[in-house]
Image (spheres, rainbow, N blue to C red):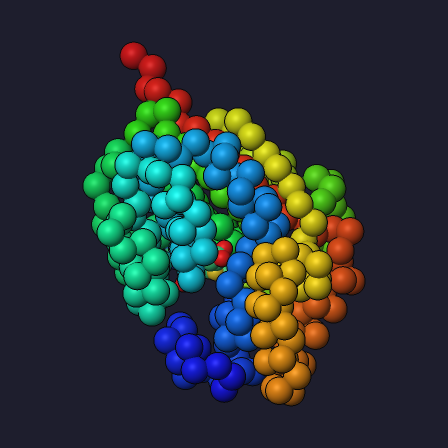
Length: 270
Ligand SMILES: C[S@@+](CC[C@H](N)C(=O)[O-])C[C@H]1O[C@@H](n2cnc3c(N)ncnc32)[C@H](O)[C@@H]1O
């Protein structure tokens, strides 16, 4: 299907009907796969303070943020993605500055206290409650005291969102994205980090505009957006799925948001 370069993409052999939404969008040419777009990522990276730091990125996907991290001149970069094809793509992106290993974010195999900053985008949302807990526990293990955990995820709003709407959104996301995505309210994201002893120091939000034309032009450029549209026009199955995803995002636009947080690991008390 579609462009030749997509032969290298993760799950290249999986049918359009079943492939997780992020890899479907990647096949169509999309490279920025997080809810708040590149602008929220830029803000997140500024607040994470990367220069001269040892940085671990969880779930770098196609390496779009990895390239921005390298441009911020960290002391070192290690990516960890569970998909071996994604890890190979990121390895090339960061070549000469770091590497990407194939591992689960909850068990990275990296040594304790090896990182000043851990970054993860559009990954925790995709995990159930237990796995979210396991990944954050691993992040706390990796961070040195004073180190920062920076995330960019799908948020729900307001903090007291009706439970029934929350359930409807989860079901609609599972049906259309084919991933059991579990977005949280800002209060719940903070609570989740805080139960692991992290202290939230910054929160930012941006519209959840992953499939809106203006966001795509900002994130993918005019040519990139034209390529995505051309690919959509050529592929009826992919178009059907993307329209179904867009319908969920539009129906629930008031309740969905892109959210980013930076939390630090306090120094141990003696
Ligand atoms: C939605 S993409 C996000 C990619 C990138 N961070 C971005 O925002 O554009 C999700 C990525 O998370 C990776 N991933 C999902 N669960 C993971 C886990 N438990 N451990 C490591 N990687 C994971 C997938 O392989 C994929 O590369």
